[in-house]
Length: 162
Image (tube, rainbow, N blue to C red; front, side):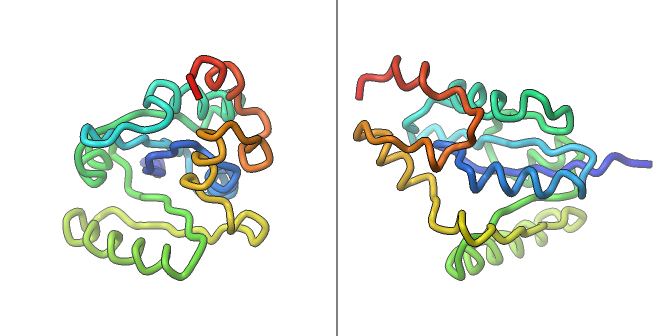
């Protein structure tokens, strides 16, 4: 039987409690989840791709069904490369749904055998988004309540000149 692999693509700059919640809730549905950090050469993130990989790996260090990788190019091409038949996405708001629906429909045209799986965020995590959390971190604020509990972020933040 073929392994059910899901790709959870995103920039994850940073990876939040909302992202973690989507992955944890999706674990029973899949044999393996690849948290795939899309590299955009035209955009520099607050955390480097290497830092993001390390941070996310620290969250899931005791979960063998989760791996973290970086990729560039189209997500559908990455799905083909990884033999993944599912693309996992989290939805917080109606605006997220409209955007994700359009992307999923385009992906379905380009790669018909891959299904998009949407999980709604739990109500208490709905307001958390990476852009706001990143701004809090950039300005030296305490964003720990929005980040996974076992994320090793302190050392990485210490090395950044804020």
